[in-house]
Image (tube, rainbow, N blue to C red; front, side):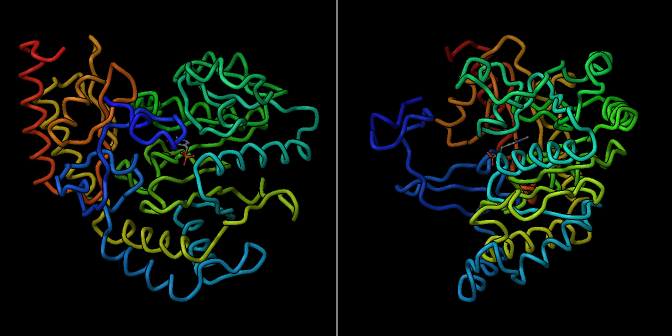
Length: 394
Ligand SMILES: *Cc1c(COP(=O)(O)O)cnc(C)c1O
């Protein structure tokens, strides 16, 4: 892949971008400035939950843009309180704080847990997270993350995080105790390559947390808002966290995230938490429209139907054992490596897919992806696999 920083040296060098400039999106498709169409199964990193420029969101955004953008987080506004009511109810949570990015929501979750501990578990400060986890790119959320490549970056890290192997209940038992204030997990580790928690693991962790007077924080930034075919992935595990974070799909592509909590740990007081963009009406109005759409009868059933159809095709191509994930957060294994190359070759065929690492390819299409779009992806994947089996791309 070319590095765009040769092309646009004015941009800080934070990503190796291909030499294409995108200018328009529509549903499952992105268009570059020459008008070439790209089939998009990345969707802005699982954020465009309803696809590119969905008419309902465009209508809501333009209507709100004519009324009010930001009244300051120090005042109430209508979309803020409406979304707060709907979202807390949909998540079985009591209170919410709105922010703009997933990292900011998780940073808030860490702060809320520390505040709770000051009151309920003084002297304790440790938060247990999982190896391979990803919680964001602020200093505290990078410190919380168990992503191996973060280990040597930006030291010294924020203190107070302890990492244990994911899906290993015995490892959790050995660290959780009187110094633990919270356990923070993703129900399905997205950036690690779509690794689901096993069905008993989350339940057992939740029980351990209760036993040790410790909060359970679930990071559903990637898995929430219908991505897995359920409104929250936690529902599938029969687990309800004390603190929950949402982002990505919540704004349908607009920067909106949320920190939610049960009443017993809602202990922020004025001065503890805030943000200039918190609860701004422009984006909370959009979030409300996303929520209404996802919670409309039949929407999540359709996500599950499309997931089954998509998984069937992936299994026929890559083998039954190789496919994992839930709903429309799916991945296939590349046990010999080569996933990055595969994604580059797909890009050349104007299909956008993603490799979280060289050993798997991830798919995160719009939640309303069509059968036709999945079929088109299938044809490209099939062609690429034939080429790769003939070792025509190295
Ligand atoms: C993307 C992601 C984040 C970070 O969200 P940003 O909006 O990029 O800050 C945190 N946790 C999980 C699980 C994510 O997938």
